[in-house]
Image (cartoon, rainbow, N blue to C red; front, top):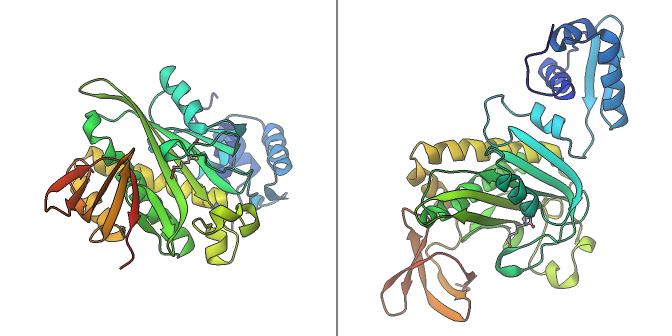
Length: 333
Ligand code: BTN
């Protein structure tokens, strides 16, 4: 019987073993579910073992998943997400790319549906905001990009950065018990040092967004020796802050689940609630800041976010300015 499930056989096998938890799943049941022979299921299990999945096989009970490798595998990530997710419905993992944002942009121009996520174990030319380089060493972090096609005007693109920052901070908090702070517009900090960043790039016409690429970089398991000396003062990693390695596939799946949930809230017109959650974690709001936008310098107090996600800055002269981007320095209080 043909298998109607669009997930690959490996993703379905991993899903079934995960659902069984500490129990096992029988080879016969898997064979029936996948519409393949038991020998073919066995061959897939052997391939998964080669990738580092520790799977026991018991002739009476069947297969049981004992542990998973730290490497990112599309099938494994898919198996950790609910079937009806938009973000992550198509996942592609590369060993190395220049920038995952570029790969996602190419997919966007080829007409691929929104929700595709491109991960790379390493990036040769990772990009940060304001033309900066983004350090992306192999297997130490999560370097990925999400393609979205939201029904938004270009002026509201900042809302997506708010969505991404809120989801990212929540996923980090739930997975690690650390308490991330958000620095406007899109830095995630731990104890004042940057642990993750978001680079939102969009293609738009005058009145509507064609597509958005949300590029996310999370310093997961870098040690201080992985960080060049000039970065050590301003950057950190989840491993450095928690004192233990963090399982990257678990965190990746958690981020995609939170992103999907918050993107659904945005589509349902709930930006205000998201913005409230963002403000609650944002260390920039209520503080005196200096914002550099190109050659221009603005000083004032960061008051709040507006309905489009822009920062409202009360300048030294008492005017309220809308700020859409720039480099923020929070003054010491
Ligand atoms: C920043 O804080 O400056 C944004 C950093 C964004 C880095 C990520 S890593 C994955 C994606 N690909 C890139 O080249 N950049 C983003």
